[in-house]
Image 1 (cartoon, rainbow, N blue to C red):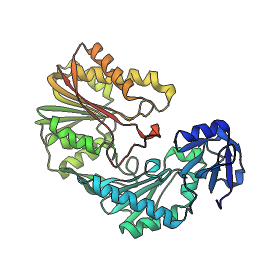
Image 2 (image 1 turned 45 degrees about the horizontal axis):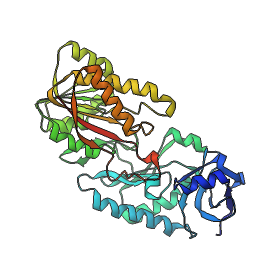
Image 3 (image 1 turned 90 degrees about the horizontal axis):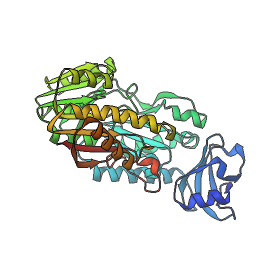
Amino acid sequence: MDEPAIKLTKKGTAWNRTGHPWVYRDDLEKYDPSLSGNIVAVTDNNGKFLGKAFFNERSKISLRMITDDDIAIDASFWRERISRCIESRRKTVNDSDAYRIAHAESDGLPSLIIDKYAEHLSIQTLSLGMDRIKPVIVEALIDLLKPDSVTARNDSSTRKLEGLAEVKETLYGTTPAAFDVKEGRIRYFVDILNGQKTGAYLDQRENRIAAEKYSRGSVLDCFCYQGLFSLHAALSAEDVTAVDSSGQALEKSGQNAILNGLSNIKTIEGKVPEVLRDLQKEGRLFDFIILDPPAYAKSKRDLQAAARGYIDINFRAMKLLKKGGYLMTSSCSHNLSEGQFMDIMDESLWESRRKAKLVEKRIQPADHPILLNFPESNYLKCFVLELL
């Protein structure tokens, strides 16, 4: 154990035994603030070695566990972990050239996100410790994947909690303007520097592809953003109506439709709850409706208001479905459990005076793995209901 050690309290030691990869500041017995940003050894309240972690005194999440083993954490260590991720994705991703290579703690790479868009990489280093070794990570990626570019999308607000600035920068090569990538049977444009997240929402990839089999007749895609659900649906449906509050997002959706030679998608700009009410007044009915809203429950304090928001859009969507129609509805709030989301479906059915059967439960794709001792990594819930 070459690194300086930080001792946990008795409570912190018990928490560490759960396997959760974070340790909070209140669970540290004593520490030297000057070690922030470094890798430290972690010991229990009796001084027994527990593992090694990134330390940041400023963050509420003061320790991010890297390994339980007393081994050297150097460039070869990080290269091996990234290499393992790459090999895993080669086994599990065969439908797209845009996917996640490293999913932070779930892949043993605390606070590191690596997304691949064709021959270009987009990364996020969301803690002080990981940000400091960014050059090591980039060097490993260049050597292992030979990308055309590596871009840091470090404009996430979570970096403020670590005392880090929000920045977007090209770390290697030249970050291109919008270029297209493949997802199942469609293609779409990506703008790594200016798109959402690291360039696009990759966590719904498998669910978007699955939407094709439920698509027929008239389809309604709510919160469509750049229209990826719409593109997949349009391959099987007669017509698709895509709704978003952002005119800029709808413009990108239109560009993606042209890219795929699809002319059966029309757009509506507006807030989804209001659009759903208007469509109901018009007497419109659909064969398939997709709801992919933003995270309503950003914290546990938001759960009550979030539940009401989810119920509102789901019961209105249910009222717009034909008998035998399908609803694909999602929540990306990790604070909302699957059980709570099911309760929301029950309440939505009651308010809509409809009945339904659950035909499929879906989660995030294999390139966004869930670490079982890390509930925060289990966040995406996607239900497919058939309305009776």
